[in-house]
Length: 534
Image (tube, rainbow, N blue to C red; front, side, top):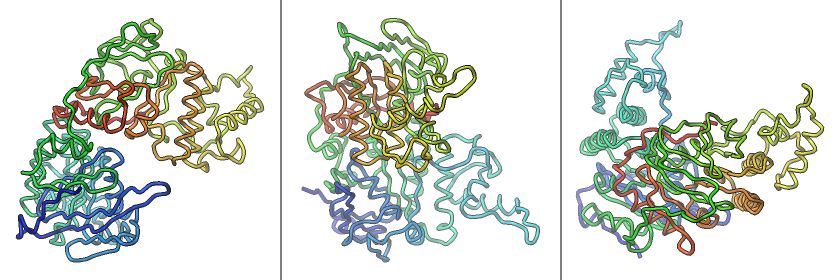
């Protein structure tokens, strides 16, 4: 049942800046949004909450015109309505909807003024086309003053603190609306992921000032402590449905967790990982690097170990450190009981490790063909006396296409022309051909369809049956509950909880992640973005 605080009854003086009525969004095989209705009031900070798969991202993408909703819904900005199945990016901009995403798309090597000009245009002199720098900097100063960003427009963005990067991105998104005398609606998608706690305070102080000045803000975040500190209202989504819209005086931390998960908070959280007496392939003790602080855990032979945590918790850093892409600052790692400290990827590969990164662009060679992508981790195998044996390479590739269910016209098909799911299967197959002892998977099914997801995990399970151990990081907790033999929760740079059968399910994982992150310092330890670069 939906809990709804009626804005007209509680605050009849508030103008509704954004209204969504009966919005649904259906994808093949699933309904991401189901008859969603909500109101965002002018001059307020309205937080949108929900677990993974709740529909938050789909709702934001419909607002942005990236997706179109199902027929029957409407979106109203001020007094102008549009059918939800007709939204476009052009409509969103014209309606005054402005989006700042996790990836701020700012440029450290450019000045603040140049960053503000991107997307809007540089003032140039007629006929010769030279940039009018004085006009550019004066225009930037006007925008910075309006948004109370106290920086020199001539300074490089790289010289500014992280919170200033976010505020410059916000100012860039809103500057045209500001110059037109209309505040518009600012949509912020997880803006604090890469910010330490002090920087979050700086950003939130600015957002409160903007809201007091009349700016309407829709904020998407997983961090409930942030919500409690800044939200005027919250809307909680679960399984594509609105389960509650509440005012600030109607919720606390436990209430939000209960709404997100669907049951009352279980306060019993395991804070230790005990592995004594188990057959361990990997032992990690007091690992410290980047956001990680004293991580300790073990991995059994033939086990699929899941790792869950909020963005910025150190999930990707853990995998890249194990694979030799980052050097640990403290701690020890043992493989088969022997201490290891990989100085690079080559040493990790020689020891039997394999790594599939989160971003396919970091592991796929789009300008090469399928054959070359499949053999990329085994190139020396095909070189004999300075000659590349392409026939053997092609024969092995054909066997892999059959073994790993890769759909392609031939092994010489350009990799860029394969579907996303088949590209990902090829990347996984590249490593499984090496028969690794330890396979590290970072969001292995991100951006692939349901059929490809099932096939990828079938390949992983076949490898496990053959003796491979796996550590898998994914933000899809339903998926994690299906594939993992055990799940660890990362929070505050440490292992904060563990789930073993029969207690592994998506809602329990969500509950542990939220409760373990409750005192996370609203971003503490998230000072580096978790992007892998193998």
